[in-house]
Amino acid sequence: MEIKRNILPKLIKNILVIRNGALGDFILTLPVFNSLKKAFPHARIEVMGNPANLALAQGYVDGVIPSNIAGLYTLYDLRCTIPQNMRQLLGKFDLVISYNSDSEGHFIQNLRRIGIPWIINGTFSSKEKLPSPVSELLLLPLKKEGIPIFSEPPRINLSHLDRKFAQRFFHSLPNSGNKPFIIIAIHPGSGSPKKCWPIENFIQLASWTNQSLGAKIILITGPAENHITKSLHPFIESYKPMLIDKPALNHLAAILEKSTVYVGNDSGITHLSAAVGTPTLALFGPTDYRIWGPKNENVKFLQSSHQCAPCSPQQMARCPKPNCMNSISIDLVKKALLSLIPRSCKSLSNNNTNAQSFRRERHYV
Image 1 (cartoon, rainbow, N blue to C red):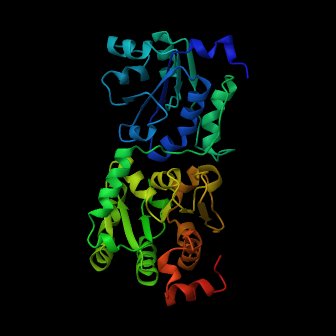
Image 2 (image 1 turned 180 degrees about the horizontal axis):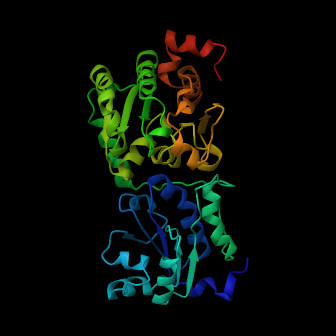
Image 3 (image 1 turned 60 degrees about the vertical axis):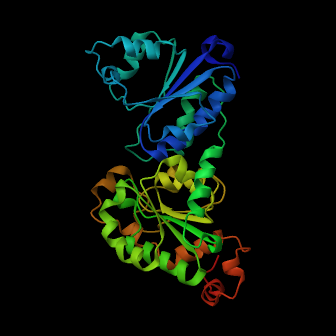
């Protein structure tokens, strides 16, 4: 494929991808890094974004730039004088791909003022229902510029140190030598409460997996779950799950990689689980799994069948109560969860009467 403007790949020495936003957005951008790495094998690729997400780009990029650097704000206003440190930082790049929200085009214009020879504006509006998966929309600007794209699902590359951290985490647990074969990771939160399955359902599911399957529960919480923390206290007191609160994302990724299965809503942590290859059950209501869901293998989706689901972002914002998420039954989630657990697991192959009984029910997948 011929690259637009007759710019040869070997002439592109330094590439910058600007990708701010939430965790899931960042993970969905990993195929962009992968495509650039293959299209420009001799170039140095750097990424600018949320500092918490940057560790997940290891193996794809050669450098990271946190988006909270001094002077960056000047690029959002044409009236501002671009400081020298920003001109030096960004002026070295031959190609910049920006996924910054830039409705008035000021950011792109200021990049041109710095003198960057090749700038690709990758932004798109998500105010209405999108026509295709987000991962494809992120690659489309590269394709339009003649850059070969490779649309493999996102995959996070974990380091030896990341995996050592996960190993120490599991070994440090009480009775770790006899820990259950099944480890179920649960993340009950999301960026929007309207995308969340009721916390009472998550508690009931976790209790069932512990009692019926002999599973050990990993409970993942963060800032978005502050409003449901009190509801989790009785479950935490009774079942003593492994709590992970506001972890470093590369460490959490390594822990998820060692988990048997993961259950969560439409969230960045769900994308994280899928991107490390863990069997993942994703619960979707107002958002469409075909657009926003991870494309990795070993992912099962439960999309609400409620009459108005999925809906547009405007409809979700106006919705007073997320009946779509409430309509996903616990039995349906149990069924889907069991279908993701390898049959070789000791907790299911032994005489576990409750689990075997549930598996024989008519609704088991």
